[in-house]
Length: 121
Image (tube, rainbow, N blue to C red; front, top):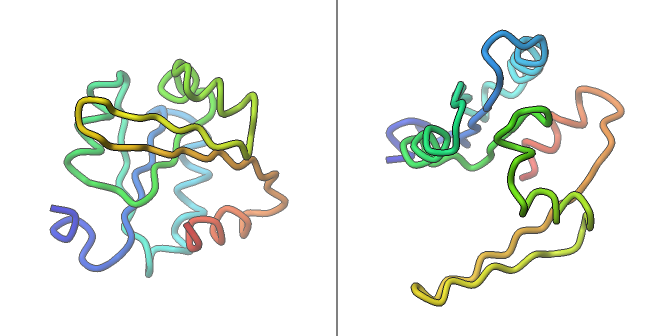
């Protein structure tokens, strides 16, 4: 399904508040990576809607606004914020999957830092 949406490009799902200034700023920055990345915007207000967007689009990268309830309400996010750089491993006993999440915190010095990170991820 991803190929149907992204046409050979990397998929980025941008989750933001509909009227936020942040949305406009990041959208303008992401125009610079448009040749390599297909950008989809989600205005999901709850976890179920976000999961549906992720399932439908199958993005390579998900970009969340820090003040979004979807990015701060998760206990896993709090653990990752508390210990940046330290991996968290989640094991599914039912399906034998191991999910490793590693949080990296980087201070942006310019818009190019965001653009370069999207290109490298």
